[in-house]
Length: 154
Image 1 (tube, rainbow, N blue to C red):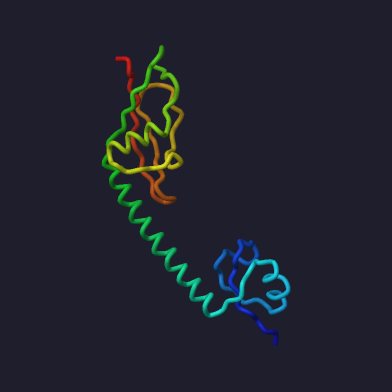
Image 2 (image 1 turned 90 degrees about the horizontal axis):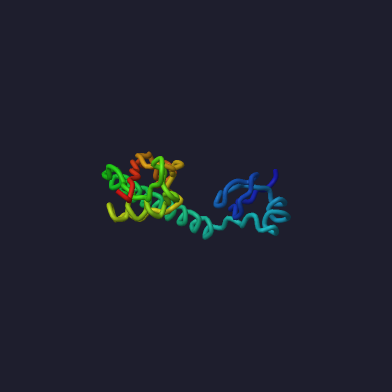
């Protein structure tokens, strides 16, 4: 009967799984390949307790960020639309483009919420009018807002 050793995966490895995974592998595989390459570490009692503590901290942090994201979603849903003034040329086309920074500034003035540039999904805006923008708060929480582009030189 072959002996097995319990190990904790340290590096991302397609065969073994995600970092932090507990595995039972044969002694030779563990001591001759995985441990010298730094892919895994032995699962001592202390290491297993440390791993469970880290997973608990990660779970609590994810729960906290989810509640903050829901609060941000509710405050953003209270905005009916965001208005931005732009210089307009002939045929109602705007000069330049609408940037995420302008939208972030407007949202900050309305709600006091700070969002990042990468969270905003903008359509291609070339003319004045009303556009739908999407703000991704978390991977599964997003808000749709109306963006109104109005001429500045009226």
